Length: 287
Image (cartoon, rainbow, N blue to C red; front, top):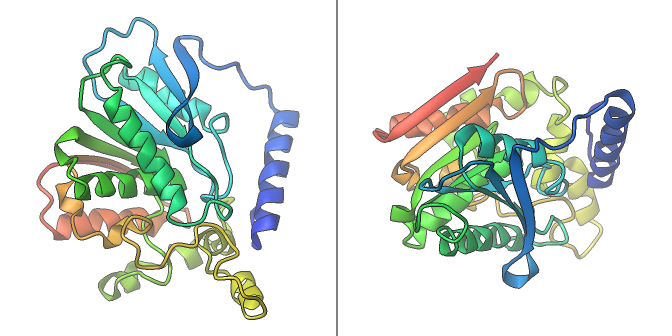
């Protein structure tokens, strides 16, 4: 089962896929070695705080953003990812349930994520972490948010508080905004269109650049009907375009070799390399 635009079709397919998984497999309960606590924070945002049992403190707090093409997903859907990071890294993790697109219009979604980072930073010591130290993390669209929100934090003067980014198969650039110097290497949307659940049609829909979107906009007064709806060159939605990527202190970057987002990750690594990134880059390409 592969996702295809328009957005309503992607959402229906995502729900059916989840239902089929539940019918076919027996999933274990949440790992009891990681405690979790749901809270309501700034402007009514919901977060889930994870802490591994026996945690003694003294580490930066992670701020996690779930995947789902910016228009799907929630805390429960990525619970296992956030729980695994907390347990594997022996750190406190705060997973942020940002308002979904397209109802949460740009830049509202990214602003929600940034509010989650600010709250975590302000409460890091109370949560059991190191005061004034956080890192961001996410998967797919959430990984792009982890990079974009980290760069926004740098622009807002929080560079010293941000210790790193964990970006797993990130979306890093709007398809219409890939820099000319990288375009010949930006081919995974075509090469791997049908190889993962996120087809090229689905990804274009999530960005707001599908043929469905263009046709509907031609006959309406709307400015965006699909998911994120950010301007193609927005540096927080498309972190590959941000001029200060080399200011990220530490980056863990995972790329799937047969995925539509393969080149989003590969090009982000190339940009770091081209700019003489001399911090700490850990890079994994899964083929």
